[in-house]
Image 1 (tube, rainbow, N blue to C red):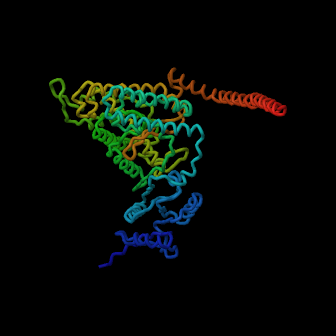
Image 2: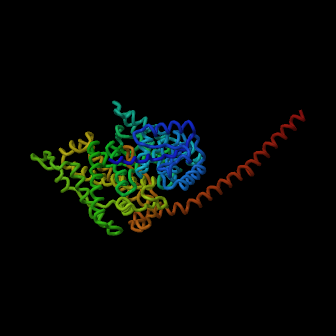
Image 3: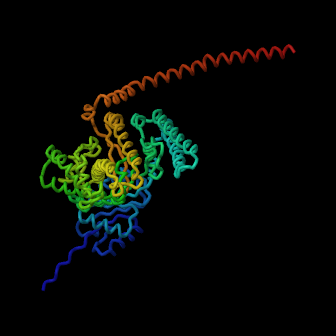
Length: 562
């Protein structure tokens, strides 16, 4: 019987310091996989299957990039894995642009072996810890006087506002003390708006945080995030952690990686850190999680249907918009439960069918970006345009941008469905115990939340959206690490700007007039200041000097006579 030929062990070319090389070689050779780590290129039997470079003393960014490019050219098509120490001077943006397939910070034995297995199978692994890099802090420009005054003032207002909120939870027994605290909160709100108007850009000066308008604030919510969302963006940002594991570089592999990341974020019960009041917050935490998971499941079904249709361009966009109401209906049915019935007016009503009949799920969100690039990448693995660069879909920056687009669609779709659920609960009291938070069981609290949501929507439609269109900004919701954040995407929106109504166009004209008159007002104030300095130094100063000199001379003569 012929002996079976032995499969050659994959060769791993390892570049590291002698001490690190010994430890890494032991990790890689003692595992269950039959790998052969090699530290000298002359010991290779053919080409290596993977190149590993471990850094103990990271060089400057330009040197690191040049060395990685040389390694890629020398050992292509072998993938490249870079191992960095826990503390290094590189920013997240720089690391994501490096030409490599694997990146680990401070690796452990199990994590290193799992990464090597994924890279040998044709995948990609990027793991960057969330920390403040010294290089990022050194590269930040110094703050100007206006920025320093804005940031310090907002931080002081936030600190005092949190103190007032803590004193109001629970509310003091004295009505006078409660009124004084609520009045202090209104004063802080006015002071904050004045700071934004004086030192902030137009987008901050026109923004109105509706969470601060409530005379009876609810400190049980995350007040630190909703109180001053704009102050958080003014603080120096820390390095954001990134963990990407891509098993395959195909459309299916992309979707599996995105689905797993978003599923973990949704299961964590995301908290609202966006700085905006969301209807999604009104649902119970478990219902909130169920709705996001249902939308993610329906998107997977929709992606398969669109992939089977083989459409592209305008046809793909039309098909997507046509299937959106059906997708939302199925997600709402999963949220409510297909067989759940609740009491209503002496009988039992099916929850899912009642919600579907009373809800309008065919609405179009004007803030949703064009879905064709996202769908083209997730269905056909097409390249994606990110910040002016056409990237392959398996690049880390392209994958993170896809995650941002998909999470924005998830949150906005969940927000639309949640608003319809709140409207249905207003007419069906028994439904509130099943879907809404306990504090929304009283009719007054529920109606107050709905009124605040309506006011926020009107303010956003009349003032905030025209400013965003004029400044070519698109707000996107990001679902990450169990939180819902809000980021701004800069892209041309001239077509939407031309479709605004009269009131919205008046807002943009006011902004344009402010931009046009601001330099002239600055020159006028500067000229008045120069004139005032001239008067104080040349006229008033010399006059005071002459008077003083005359007094001294008179005193000298009097002393001489004496």
